[in-house]
Image (tube, rainbow, N blue to C red; front, side, top):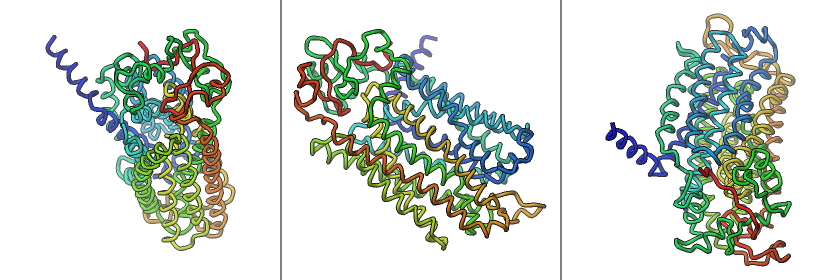
Length: 553
């Protein structure tokens, strides 16, 4: 038995020894999560029929509104779980939390599949809500872990991670369309993904408890400093300065804290409460601006994603949902596969250039997000006026590729807007705000607008036994101009992303960089002590209390 325990320990330690393996795990989990997101829009006619026939809705006419609400229900679970998981990483092993969250995700997929035989819209909506718990568990851990362990290739690995979003969603369209017409129906799509995700959930429970918890002396911040080349091995003075500890043993706080007050020296400052971490984020204008820009981006993207196949059918490009979903999904998949990795590579190049110029990573990320967002939105605008299919799909594909380029810099901007110890919570809270102000209201608002302006352009199953019957009502022909107005509303929603990241760019230009000298910040000039600068771009000055620790036992 002792030999078996020893073998098990060696094997689990081997699993955790290579960061690339764990980063690949995050990429796979993210991919399957967004395949799940593509199921409902990829088989919208079948879900529309389910909604109409459900006992609770009693043959409602507002199917697009209820479909949009269904697609957005995961935010309820995410809202609860994101802040909880983001805060619990201070006291619990991150991968254990991920394993618990993914286990809930698998259970939610099974419940979603069971909603069809029971005819319950409520059960399906509740299952979609639970799926948000699984997403929250690894979203708050994944990006900080990748940033910590990817060295000089942060943009590359973050790019791969975020490529799973458009690629997974697009694959979900085709997957749902195929499964919906198979003997298993759309419930089979949920059952199968639960089976596939289960090994990833179990993988988390096999890992040592201290993965991404501690460095040699118990602080994740030390690992960050060494990996980033900011502190040399054996340089205790610089190590302490980075950790927030001055020469006399006192600790430091952020000079860029809008209140310019030291943190409380109570136990809660070591393991902060959710409220304290929320305030830590909201008091930083750069974080708030980034979050609102990300919300506008998410709202625009999910608007296209949820109703994209329906737009393609309503505008007369395709008669059947399967064809529309496959082509639309293919265009978005190619755009994501091309744009997101390019965004990662470009981010690495821009970061290196800005660092050489003594400028902050926050400025590099926000400038890139602003410029490319504006270019992508301008190209997508052409879909509103495009008549031929090649122009519609071409402008959608090229514009979407540009927008996907911004995924890595947008998330990096969030990571750089808060101190390192708050990054897990900031990622969860930022995504929560993105959902709350972006991709949750967007499908509901766009669905309601579409029901109002173009009620005959809703895909529906054909009457009778002819599987090739048109899935769009003939009355949609007269409503195509109104359908383009709905498209324009999505583009306008999306345009606010470029505006907000432009504001973030302006804010980031005023942040002190890592090459600053003592005395240039207001706190230093007021005589509170000498300053040190970490790779997060934050200036730190002496205080009488500790910086926050992540996963301190």
